[in-house]
Image (cartoon, rainbow, N blue to C red; front, side):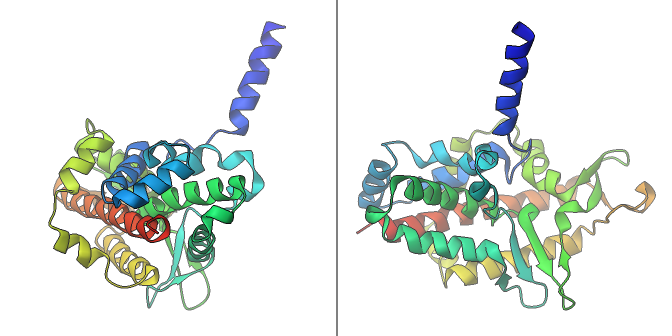
Length: 270
C-alpha cells in the first residue's frame, strides 16, 4: 500500500512537472517580473495586484512553466518567438499569442476569472521568454525553421558540451551571478536613467521583438553553434566572450522588465 501511494504521488507530480530549465531560470523570470513591478505606476500596481489576489507579480513569473503540463491549452502557449531570418520580423504563434493576450486583458474586468488569470500569468512569463536568446528561432527563405536552441558549443573547457537552450536558460547567469537573487538583479539593473528606459520603449511590440531578433542573430553569429557535430568541431566559448554575453543577457532582462511594465501600465493604469 505504501509503495502504491508513493507511486501515485510521483505520477501526480509528473503530470504537472516542468522541464528542468526554463528561459532565464526561475531567478531570471522573477527578475524580469520584479523590474516590471518597480516600474509600474501606483494606480496600475494597485489595480493589477487587486486583480491577481493581492500578490506580487513575481509570484507568478514562472507559473506558465510550472503548470503547462496540467492543461492542453496551457501547454500550447508559445514559449519561443519565431522570426523571419532576413528581416527579423516576428512570425508564427508566439507574437500572435502575445497580441491576443494583450487584447483580451484590455477588457480584463469583464473576463471570466480563469481566462483572466491564465492570460495575465502567460503575459508575465512570455515577456521574459521572448527576450531570452535561447527562446528564439528563425524561418529561412525555404520556410524551414532554424532552432538554435538545439545547437551545441563547448563551454569554458573542451570537455563541457552545452546546448544553447541550456546555456541561456541557466548556465550563463548562474556562472556569472550565481549568488544573486531576483532582487539583486533589479537593484543592479533598474538603476538607470529614465531616458535609457524610454529608449527601450520606443516603437511597438513588434518593433521590440524585431530588435530582440536582430540582437540574438548577432549572438549566434559570434557563437557559431553546431547541431550533432563531432566534439572537435564545436566552438569553444571562453571566459572573455562569456562575460560579453553576460552583459547582453543583463540588458535583455532589463528590457523585458521595462517593457512588461509598459504593457501592464497601459492595461491596468486606467
